[in-house]
Image: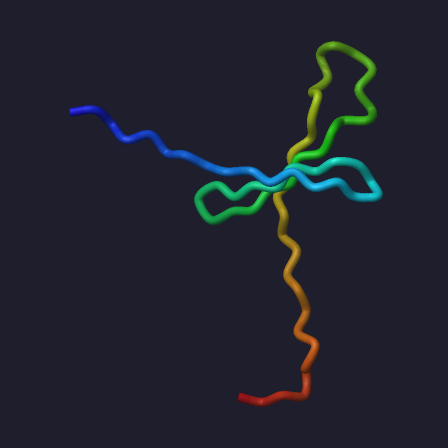
Length: 64
């Protein structure tokens, strides 16, 4: 029996800071940016950051 391979998607977005590729793997969100500080072949082409941003609630006075 063959093992089922996991498949993930990514979304490219153009921002004022450059092009970013956003993706989620196993419930964690990541953003991948071009490494603009690359000056050697040994430096990575892209930098990947875990996206830990949480949107603040606009209605702080609401009680549930």
